[in-house]
Image 1 (cartoon, rainbow, N blue to C red):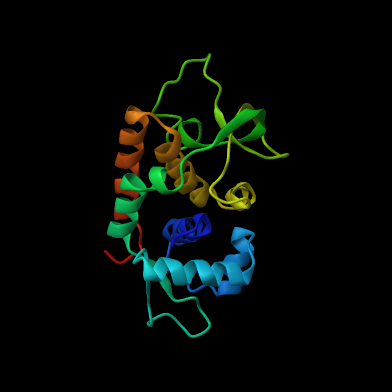
Image 2: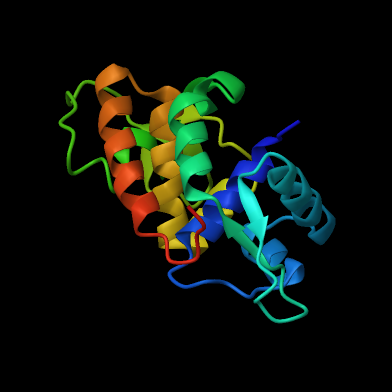
Length: 184
Protein backbone atom coordinates (compact mmCIF):
# COMPACT_ATOMS: atom_id res chain seq x y z
CA UNK A 1 0.00 0.00 0.00
CA UNK A 2 1.34 3.43 -0.95
CA UNK A 3 2.29 5.94 1.72
CA UNK A 4 2.56 9.71 1.24
CA UNK A 5 6.37 9.65 1.38
CA UNK A 6 6.36 7.33 -1.64
CA UNK A 7 4.76 10.06 -3.73
CA UNK A 8 7.25 12.62 -2.41
CA UNK A 9 10.13 10.36 -3.50
CA UNK A 10 8.66 9.79 -6.97
CA UNK A 11 8.09 13.53 -7.39
CA UNK A 12 11.69 14.21 -6.33
CA UNK A 13 12.92 11.86 -9.04
CA UNK A 14 10.57 13.39 -11.62
CA UNK A 15 11.74 16.89 -10.67
CA UNK A 16 15.41 16.07 -11.28
CA UNK A 17 16.61 17.92 -14.40
CA UNK A 18 18.71 14.95 -15.50
CA UNK A 19 18.63 11.22 -14.76
CA UNK A 20 19.71 10.90 -11.17
CA UNK A 21 22.31 8.46 -9.98
CA UNK A 22 21.92 9.59 -6.39
CA UNK A 23 22.28 7.07 -3.60
CA UNK A 24 19.50 6.34 -1.15
CA UNK A 25 21.54 8.28 1.38
CA UNK A 26 21.66 11.38 -0.84
CA UNK A 27 17.95 11.12 -1.63
CA UNK A 28 17.18 10.77 2.08
CA UNK A 29 19.21 13.86 2.90
CA UNK A 30 17.55 15.94 0.18
CA UNK A 31 14.06 14.81 1.24
CA UNK A 32 14.80 15.23 4.97
CA UNK A 33 13.85 11.59 5.59
CA UNK A 34 15.76 8.64 6.93
CA UNK A 35 17.54 6.35 4.50
CA UNK A 36 15.30 3.44 5.54
CA UNK A 37 12.17 5.55 4.83
CA UNK A 38 13.44 6.37 1.35
CA UNK A 39 14.40 2.75 0.64
CA UNK A 40 10.98 1.50 1.80
CA UNK A 41 9.24 4.24 -0.22
CA UNK A 42 11.17 3.15 -3.30
CA UNK A 43 10.19 -0.49 -2.80
CA UNK A 44 6.49 0.40 -2.53
CA UNK A 45 6.66 2.72 -5.56
CA UNK A 46 8.41 -0.01 -7.57
CA UNK A 47 5.70 -2.50 -6.58
CA UNK A 48 2.99 -0.03 -7.67
CA UNK A 49 4.79 0.64 -10.99
CA UNK A 50 5.37 4.34 -10.29
CA UNK A 51 9.12 3.66 -10.49
CA UNK A 52 11.28 1.26 -12.43
CA UNK A 53 14.80 0.11 -11.70
CA UNK A 54 17.38 1.30 -14.22
CA UNK A 55 20.33 -1.09 -14.21
CA UNK A 56 22.24 1.22 -16.57
CA UNK A 57 22.88 3.58 -13.67
CA UNK A 58 26.12 2.99 -11.75
CA UNK A 59 26.36 0.71 -8.72
CA UNK A 60 25.78 2.59 -5.49
CA UNK A 61 23.03 4.64 -7.08
CA UNK A 62 19.39 4.16 -6.18
CA UNK A 63 18.85 3.22 -9.87
CA UNK A 64 15.29 4.54 -9.96
CA UNK A 65 13.32 6.24 -12.71
CA UNK A 66 9.70 7.41 -12.63
CA UNK A 67 7.16 5.85 -14.96
CA UNK A 68 5.64 9.08 -16.23
CA UNK A 69 2.42 7.64 -17.64
CA UNK A 70 1.63 5.90 -14.36
CA UNK A 71 2.69 8.91 -12.29
CA UNK A 72 0.50 11.30 -14.26
CA UNK A 73 -2.44 8.90 -14.16
CA UNK A 74 -2.14 8.45 -10.39
CA UNK A 75 -1.64 12.14 -9.59
CA UNK A 76 -4.59 13.29 -11.68
CA UNK A 77 -6.96 10.41 -11.06
CA UNK A 78 -6.16 9.06 -7.63
CA UNK A 79 -4.07 11.31 -5.42
CA UNK A 80 -6.93 13.36 -4.00
CA UNK A 81 -8.81 10.19 -3.03
CA UNK A 82 -5.88 8.33 -1.50
CA UNK A 83 -4.28 11.33 0.23
CA UNK A 84 -7.06 13.94 0.58
CA UNK A 85 -6.28 17.53 1.49
CA UNK A 86 -6.52 18.43 5.17
CA UNK A 87 -6.83 22.12 5.91
CA UNK A 88 -6.55 23.73 9.29
CA UNK A 89 -6.28 27.11 10.92
CA UNK A 90 -4.65 30.30 9.69
CA UNK A 91 -0.88 30.18 10.09
CA UNK A 92 2.45 31.34 8.68
CA UNK A 93 3.94 29.10 6.05
CA UNK A 94 5.05 28.41 2.49
CA UNK A 95 2.58 28.96 -0.34
CA UNK A 96 1.36 25.80 -2.04
CA UNK A 97 -1.30 24.49 -4.43
CA UNK A 98 -2.92 27.20 -6.56
CA UNK A 99 -1.16 29.93 -4.60
CA UNK A 100 2.38 28.84 -5.51
CA UNK A 101 4.29 28.62 -8.78
CA UNK A 102 3.56 27.46 -11.36
CA UNK A 103 -0.21 27.83 -10.87
CA UNK A 104 -0.27 31.19 -9.08
CA UNK A 105 0.55 33.08 -12.29
CA UNK A 106 -2.17 31.25 -14.23
CA UNK A 107 -5.08 31.45 -11.80
CA UNK A 108 -6.67 34.59 -10.47
CA UNK A 109 -8.01 34.23 -6.95
CA UNK A 110 -10.13 36.66 -5.05
CA UNK A 111 -8.11 38.84 -2.67
CA UNK A 112 -10.57 37.73 0.02
CA UNK A 113 -9.49 34.08 -0.34
CA UNK A 114 -6.81 33.00 2.10
CA UNK A 115 -3.92 31.29 0.31
CA UNK A 116 -3.02 27.70 1.16
CA UNK A 117 0.27 27.27 3.01
CA UNK A 118 2.35 24.48 4.43
CA UNK A 119 2.91 25.50 8.05
CA UNK A 120 6.55 26.51 8.46
CA UNK A 121 8.44 28.92 10.70
CA UNK A 122 10.40 30.33 7.74
CA UNK A 123 7.27 30.86 5.68
CA UNK A 124 6.73 34.18 3.96
CA UNK A 125 2.94 34.09 3.78
CA UNK A 126 -0.07 33.88 6.07
CA UNK A 127 -2.81 31.59 5.00
CA UNK A 128 -4.94 28.55 5.63
CA UNK A 129 -2.75 25.62 6.62
CA UNK A 130 -2.67 22.62 4.32
CA UNK A 131 -1.15 19.49 5.79
CA UNK A 132 1.72 18.50 3.46
CA UNK A 133 1.90 15.01 2.02
CA UNK A 134 4.71 14.28 4.46
CA UNK A 135 6.06 16.31 7.41
CA UNK A 136 9.44 16.99 5.76
CA UNK A 137 7.89 18.41 2.56
CA UNK A 138 8.28 22.12 3.44
CA UNK A 139 11.99 21.75 4.26
CA UNK A 140 12.67 19.60 1.19
CA UNK A 141 10.76 22.06 -1.00
CA UNK A 142 12.75 25.02 0.33
CA UNK A 143 15.93 23.31 -0.85
CA UNK A 144 14.62 22.31 -4.31
CA UNK A 145 12.55 24.74 -6.39
CA UNK A 146 11.61 22.12 -9.01
CA UNK A 147 10.40 19.69 -6.35
CA UNK A 148 8.38 22.52 -4.78
CA UNK A 149 6.57 23.08 -8.09
CA UNK A 150 5.71 19.39 -8.43
CA UNK A 151 4.49 19.25 -4.83
CA UNK A 152 2.41 22.43 -5.30
CA UNK A 153 0.72 20.89 -8.35
CA UNK A 154 0.03 17.72 -6.39
CA UNK A 155 -1.53 19.86 -3.66
CA UNK A 156 -3.63 21.70 -6.26
CA UNK A 157 -4.99 18.33 -7.36
CA UNK A 158 -5.67 17.41 -3.71
CA UNK A 159 -7.20 20.72 -2.59
CA UNK A 160 -8.44 22.54 -5.68
CA UNK A 161 -11.86 22.83 -7.25
CA UNK A 162 -12.59 21.38 -10.70
CA UNK A 163 -11.08 24.36 -12.56
CA UNK A 164 -7.90 24.32 -10.48
CA UNK A 165 -7.55 20.55 -10.91
CA UNK A 166 -8.00 20.88 -14.69
CA UNK A 167 -5.27 23.53 -15.00
CA UNK A 168 -2.98 21.58 -12.65
CA UNK A 169 -3.58 18.41 -14.70
CA UNK A 170 -2.61 20.25 -17.90
CA UNK A 171 0.62 21.46 -16.30
CA UNK A 172 1.38 18.02 -14.88
CA UNK A 173 0.85 16.53 -18.33
CA UNK A 174 3.34 18.99 -19.84
CA UNK A 175 5.84 18.45 -17.03
CA UNK A 176 5.71 14.65 -17.22
CA UNK A 177 6.41 14.86 -20.95
CA UNK A 178 9.59 16.83 -20.16
CA UNK A 179 10.99 14.44 -17.55
CA UNK A 180 14.38 13.33 -18.85
CA UNK A 181 14.93 10.47 -16.47
CA UNK A 182 11.58 8.82 -17.06
CA UNK A 183 10.27 5.70 -18.63
CA UNK A 184 6.99 6.11 -20.45
